[in-house]
Every structure is written in structure tokens, then in C-alpha cells.
Length: 214
Image (cartoon, rainbow, N blue to C red; front, side):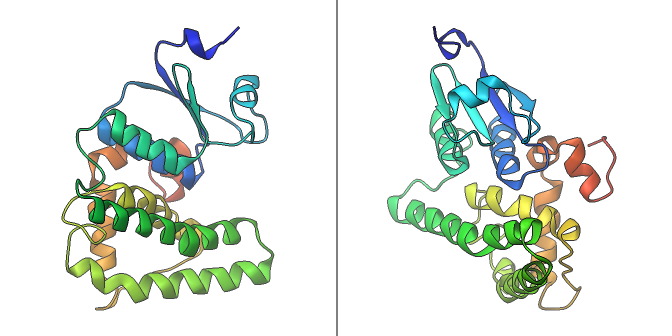
């Protein structure tokens, strides 16, 4: 008997504090998808998630008889399932570049965020410095285009925004200098975006001292 087969709406099982869940919530908000978002304690998963997801991980997205449990797959699925507004470029070369950027964000920055959150003190300190230095190095590119290597908001920005939102919580300070100015302005553009504000959980608002009002 399939619980999923009876489902009439999309359900997103989300970790309210995780940047991997956050990136998908941004896409859902950007697309205006009607979805039930269920905040889940990662240490106490509902039986439904355990049954649907062989890895017992968050986030998990359920759309009728389809269960997805990898955030990048969810983001691309949502972009294809709800084509407007498009969050990946139309042309194959540009789409390939965007996917490569996402891969690099995962390898270079998500890895460091995870290290800061879960590593030893020494590993955390090293990761903080590496993340800060890496962001400062790429800061000037945001002077060229309003979003990450693009005139339009894309899935790449959806991956980067949750990391930038968490910098203060992670103990990574971006100084206000001429070099960092384009990055700081990019962060403001992202954080003021209606879909980003809509995507925030109460836990995420508290990360930067915000209240529950958007």
C-alpha cells in the first residue's frame, strides 16, 4: 500500500536550520509552488521519511509517487516541473556552466560550512579562514553582474544565498573594504529578494537576529 500514491499535494520534509534544505525552500518560494513544508528534527525522523528515503536524510521532497532525497536533484526537478520563472539558462553551454558552479560551491564552500559545523576546533578554525579568504577572493566578480556570473537569479544563487546568510552564525566575518563591497552588495540583493524572505524559517531568522516578520 503506497502512502505516496494517495498524495494530492507536494510535501517537503525540511530541516529548519540546514542550508541544504534552505536552498530548496528558496526555489519553492521563487516558483510559487503550493507545497506542505514540514519542519523535521533530523535526530527524530518521521516514519514516512524513513520509508521514502533509503538514506534517512533531509531534505526529502515528495511529489505524488516521486520521492527525491538529494537537494540538487530537487532543485532541477522543480525548475523543470515549474518552468516559470526559469532558474537555469536556456542554452546547454550556459546550463553546463551553471551546474559546474553549483558543483564548485558544494566542493569548495559547502564542505567548509559542514566542517565548521561538525569538525574539531582546529578544523573549524581552518575552515573559517579558508571560507572567508575564498569569498573575499571572488568578491570582485559581483561588480560585473547582479547575480553569480549571471544577469538573472539562478539555482547557483539559491545554493550560495543560504551559506552567506549563515556567515555570522559560522563565525565568518566579511570586512567592509573596497574589495568586499561587491560581495556585500550582492548579499543585500539576495536577502531582500521576496522569495528569499519567504523561504526563511524562524530558526534562520534568528541566525541574524531577525524576528518572525518578513
